[in-house]
Length: 198
Image (cartoon, one colour):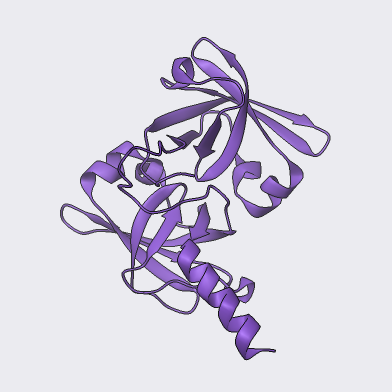
């Protein structure tokens, strides 16, 4: 379980295909604090640490993960948002994030707002996911508040701290992003389909 509050970056330094799996090695200041078997969110995708060596570590993404996230598009040198699992005795500063990406979305607009930024996104609404105005959304692992919610579009406003301390400062129009929709909204949508379609 995560909160969507990013702790640092990981730089992709090695990508190794192994049948349908992808081994991803990253360099990060968090590496020395990690341990084998630990869960760590990478651009919002929960992956298990399988190897650690000084300031680098390795995780493995299986076929299912690569199909439902943007991790299969990683390149050497890419910066990944990192968050370790939340502590049960800590504050929930973002919102409840599972680290299970629902689908990939696309950045369709970036606008500087004289001290902040507005990012616009599109996603395939046929998969049944929804946003609501002022609801929560996780983009590349970052907990954010939805504005301008549409049927298959939404926007988020980014403050300078978030812009600088996440990979939002690298995000461009047409870039793919990992989306995890609000868990409460997903349960309500599921219950609605069960009770009104039966």
